[in-house]
Length: 113
Image (cartoon, rainbow, N blue to C red; front, top):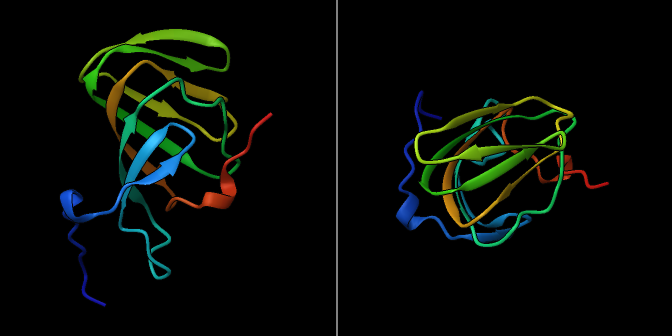
C-alpha cells in the first residue's frame, strides 16, 4: 500500500445512515486510523453514540442545531464540534457536514438508546 490515499467524494456512492446520506472516504480493511465523511442530513438525525469513535463535525452548509448529551447548540456554517465517545448526539435541520471519525468508522459502533 502507498503511504497516502486520495478520495474523490463525487465518485463515492452515498449510503443511508441514521442522519441521512453519507459518502465515506478511506474506509478499508487496512486503514484503522481515521475516515472522512460528507453527510447530507436530510431530516432530524436519530440520537446515537459511539463507544470507541471520536467524531469531529464541520458544518459546511445549512443551519439548525446539534443536540449533545441533551443540550441544544445552534450551528451554522464553519462551526466545528468535537464529539467524544459516549456523547449522545444528533443533528437537527437540513445541512451538509464533514465528519472525521477517529479511529476509522465502524458501523458496529453506532448505539441507540
